[in-house]
Length: 349
Ligand code: TXA
Ligand code: MG
Image (tube, rainbow, N blue to C red; front, side):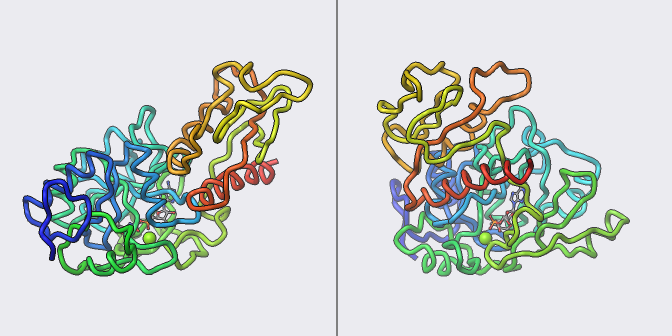
């Protein structure tokens, strides 16, 4: 194991009080850190920092913005994040800390980046049982978003070496603490609707849950292999769709459209006369004036929400036009989410 100096943001370091403190500082500074949990190694980032969270998708080379699990060091830490119900309380009492992830409605004013929810009104939360993870989370003092620390399409890592091999030159600081005891991802259960549904079987079995709740629990199918993301997303995972119609790859604006820009919007004209600079402030957002895909990813869901018609707000536009975003790197994930958002609207109609 390499020694870690004060300003080092990469390398593998054996977990001890000093390296854990170092990892916590990195997280607070918006850097990524790979850390051990009892299930698999996670690729962590400050969940309240959209830019840091966007770095997770970039490093994983994830082709879409699957929502992420947010990790906490203490049970009470979730009180400011999600709406807790009776079923959640019983499961937390029985299985936390441990390999059970709960999906619950986000609270108003929840400080977690919308990128973690992939634009959904819910948030996945978990308190890991691993001592090093707990110390790190408490020291970081904020919720930490963490998918498994592997490149998308590869197996979840259960040793520090897996992480280093899978992420290669993009590997962040890796806090090493031997192999994961469980080696299988957490069970994900959706408690945001009337009936609890298991979205991903994992460390806690459906029988354990059924027994605790005194009722049979449905398991949603089918599941894909990587991250066990649903293969037919519409079946199990709702997708964020703005209320207003979304028009992609716009090269100009139709009257009444708001603009979600990428890069310079100087030459965006409005059909019939005028240009983007004439739009009211509430009708224009720019994902990244500098065409930085990382910045665009961090801004995506927040800006879509800004431009969408919210209850009780008086917006001056009736549709959203989105400028083209390159189909490279994080642009693939951004376009995937935009297309899904646009298609979900078609399916709803
Ligand atoms: O054991 C684990 O859960 C590991 C360790 C690091 O904690 N994490 C992990 O994260 O496996 P990830 O991102 O690889 O898998 C998260 C799963 C995905 O299938 C995702 O679609 C689902 O949880 N998920 C997260 N938030 C969700 C939400 N709001 N609604 C529905 N599904 C959600
Ligand atoms: Mg995964």
